[in-house]
Length: 130
Ligand code: CDP
Image (cartoon, rainbow, N blue to C red):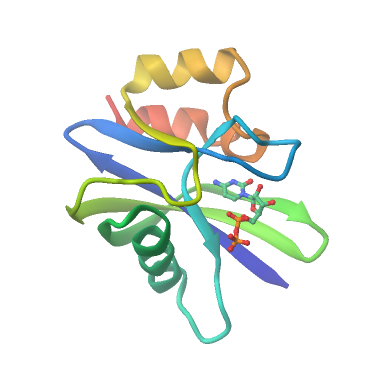
């Protein structure tokens, strides 16, 4: 069983989203950025590494947000809150990043612009932004 950890990075009352480029099913949709937890890593350590690699930012990982979401038989997804410590996100693997407030997040979810797994956390995320 492997885990993917995604970060709810909040800065100045806004949530960081990143637009995926692959696989085709989710290309163009927005997600909480993250990646797979490697053997021997903590969830928080994996998130801090992935966001440094993918976006060039330093974050401090915090508590889990919402429920875990099964992605496949052997893969599940968890979200952690994270605070931005340093840097301005510059995507290397994503096509774009944006910062959203609760209203914008809800509008994107209603328009089907979030990756399906992350849409499960809509109320949890909106709650952090109000
Ligand atoms: O790059 P790495 O293989 O470590 O991870 P990834 O490709 O970013 O994510 C692995 C899987 O988790 C993919 O199927 C993503 O679609 C999914 N994922 C997700 O559903 N929501 C996220 N916030 C992050 C990843």
